[in-house]
Amino acid sequence: MDVWLLVPIALPVIGGAVLLVSAFREQAASDAGDSGTGAERENRVSAGLCAYVGAVLGISVALALAAAWTGDREAVLFTLLDAIPVYFRVDAVGRLFVTVVSVIWVLAALFAFVYMRHEGKEKRYFGFYLMLYGVLVAFDFSGNLVTMYLFYELTTLVSMPLVLHNGKRESVMAALKYLFYSLCGAYGGLFAIFFLYRYSHSLTFTAGGTLDMAAVQGHEGILLIAVFAALLGFGAKAGMAPLHAWLPTAHPVAPSPASAVLSGVIVKSGVLAVVRVVFYIVGADFLRGTWVQQTWMALALLTVFMGSMLAYRERVFKKRLAYSTVSQVSYIMFGLSLLTADGFTGAMLHVAVHAVVKCGLFLTAGVFVYYFNYTRVEELVGIGKRMPKMLWCYLLLSLALVGIPPTGGFVSKWYLAQGALQSDMGVFAWLGPVVLLVSALLTAGYLLPVAMKGFFPGDAAAADSGAGNHGAAAVAANEVGEPTKGTKTSGTKASHEWEISGKEEPPLAIRADGREEAFPAAKADCRKEPAFAMLLPLVILAALAVLAGVFPGALIQYASEIATSVL
Image (cartoon, rainbow, N blue to C red; front, top):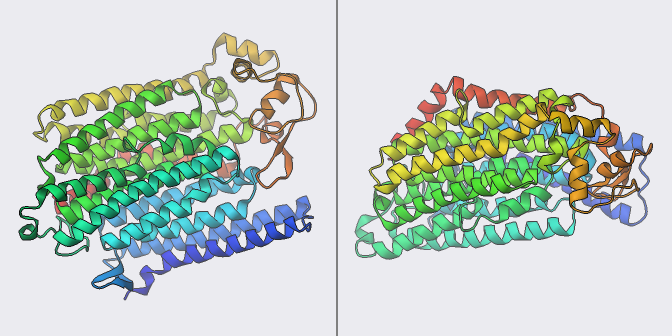
């Protein structure tokens, strides 16, 4: 047994558990009345916490990448049932996914070191954050279907606290919705596992599939139903219709770094589960030309168009990005459903590109919330004059998501369109590229105007700014009937009320841990750019989005090799 394969799984889980124990002990002491912590002690705790999280995460990521890229490794943790071990093995697709997870996890953590000081309860957040990384590494390195299912369920359970972090009613309800959708979907996958165990030589992942065709003979109908249940069930985590509604509910209420990893990484666990079932257990040949493939393609294209249209109509910025994720992840599902080499290659490319881009976009939303408490699109008019570097990063990420050359999004969507045209799937051969093109136009329509109006707000916005408020922010507040008099309030609109009133004292916000503090917008209203720890991840992600299009050769070759092995 290769013990080094288990270390990057166990280390972050143990490190996160230590933080959670410390957080719960502090909470108990606070509830007992021993809550005296001055600002100096709080700063020391924050610095120490960042150092601890950075060390644990950095070592875990280094070990995970070393395990992934230094040869084929495998390890059996224990035997769950006869001939069904909890088993880990490094393979090509696992390497790709664990690399994407690791890159996103480090950059989102760096951003969160600053952002979560405003949210409060940092220890609890980073405790679950570290544990979730370990669970995702185990999920990516799963060597058989049962191990994958076990850690798929753990991914849901450990990520749910990130959604309900602030403890408000809407956060709790959103987390419960996420839990309900994910568990219901997982049960569809479990239903499929029962039948696949009966009709497969083994549940160990093998490129091309492990079906026992002699046993399947005469039972194709029930097996197709089981596979379709798995596609719908695991597709719930990926946001594929009809089980997509949890995404636009969960993202707006979660802290922005949590939204970044939910959209960039967690939804990809549904994609990987589908890849494992279709290409490593069932085999593409069994599904090719069946009603399952056609229905899968139809649902994927429906989700692509529906998500883009809903995002175009949405005015809450993080909810708009959530609907965008619904659409963009179904690009991947469509590429997989083609069951062609180019379609599979495009899907794997889009896994990496979308993770980078959507993580960056949600982090920009976090900047807007942290410094200005802006949550709606119309409030972002003129933001480029205050934070030009940040908005340039947003623009590059948006161009990549639209698919404008020479960004990575263009390369992945090119392969998806070529895969559809070469698929010989009748109407889907031309309908797929048409839907992808329409979706790209809608994506440009809901992302690029933010940058355009951010850099060029126009005369009306300039007049509003000179009048002592932030223009669109005041308009948005008045449209929903909110007060414009400056009062000391908590909640999402407090900073707007202070800005509109012109009071000398900023409002107080109620943090998630119950303490009051001035809104960051009040403390940093004149900043030209966000803090370095927040800007650096955005710059790196924007650079990666562009470099993936300028130098795509290595990534294309790797994805093509995976496609060749499974098809």
